[in-house]
Length: 304
Ligand code: ZN
Image 1 (cartoon, rainbow, N blue to C red):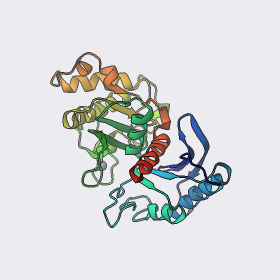
Image 2 (image 1 turned 45 degrees about the vertical axis):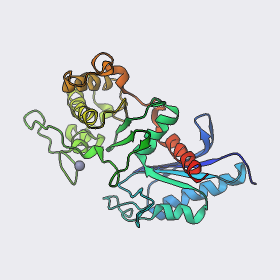
Image 3 (image 1 turned 135 degrees about the vertical axis):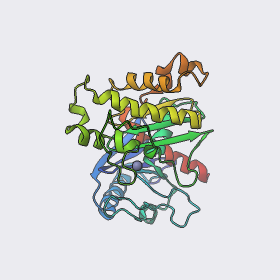
């Protein structure tokens, strides 16, 4: 069955699960499935089988967008384009995941980080519509950030790794050493969901809202947001993820970020309206999978 209308396949590849969808946007998701992240062969095989099955119902796909956990190589000119780069995740280091997609589907494929994908989703349908420069940060199991700068997703040398920046760590106030295997007490090492659970002995979701954990958490995130603000001059910062989306955390993060900037950035949106500068995702927890659809859309446009 051949159709003239575009139909996109979307993969949101996460460290614990892969979400796959077929459709063209938030109001047109025709099918969706989730698979646990096991080995590249098994998980990618399930994703591609899902697309093949759904093509029988909905017609041939016109492009595929793949937003994946990293680190990864998103540069089409690089010899290792489409590979997962060395990662502690067993079995995934050097996996050529884009080749797995392209050997099953001879259509345009876009490949980027999960957070760049989520950023693009927010630009296309969420809270970054019309913006030229903004950041999407996720604080969940890990911490990562995608950046859209002057109208393009930012890659640079490889891609940003905003979760691994250094933050001030007062060992007197927070003696926890951090969990990052590379840096110990980087932002992810101190503020990720895994760090919260290890520091307090329980998951973030079970800690009471008035627990001191949240002031500490907001402080680390606010330091990061102030640094991103000073570095990239984003017009808005979107904070998502299982921890980042907690409604009681957001006001603390907004206030503390403004305090860290201390009046230096002379913009009304920061000085007077920080609630509209640091925001939750417009697409909720759907930024990632919808972002993968937006990536597919871009891949098709780039080809035509
Ligand atoms: Zn780190």
